[in-house]
Amino acid sequence: MEMNFCRRCGSSLANVENHIYKCTKGHVIFANSSPTVGIFFVTEENNVLLSVRGIEPRKGMLDAFGGFVDGAESLEHAIERELEEELGLKKGDYTSPQYLISETGTYSYREEGLPVLSSLYWSRLLVETPEPHDDVADIAIYHLADVPLDQLHDQDIVAGIKTLQDKLL
Ligand SMILES: [Zn+2]
Image (cartoon, rainbow, N blue to C red; front, side):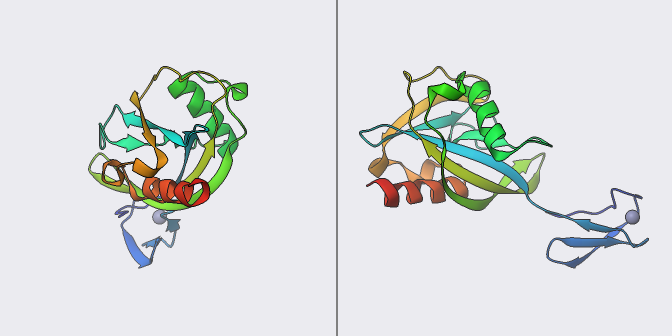
């Protein structure tokens, strides 16, 4: 991520090192990544449910269910909220999310690449396959061994699937 102006005083920023910027008045600004959550549902037969993205960026590519963590919520709350928004699921409709891996990625927004830090989980659905809502266009189901890695929307999702394969296959 590149930043040009100080969000505190509007004067120009210089990159000090890595994600640290300093303006001409001495304000220090940190260009940290934004936290996201993603969750994969896996059946007893090792079929994995994936989200088909209904919006840009990378519309039509495969993704975990989930999204950005809101300003003041926990990872657990973000998962619950996103699963209700995207799939209409309640907390009792799936087993407690199990942590898989964290990975960095990039989210393109208005021609800017935003760094994201993705925390990925897996769970088992306790209800029938739900109907997609919100920014999920469809639900794709693949055997965990046959997930097309080149159709996954970013490197964090690839890392999550590979971790699941190591764990369950
Ligand atoms: Zn400043």
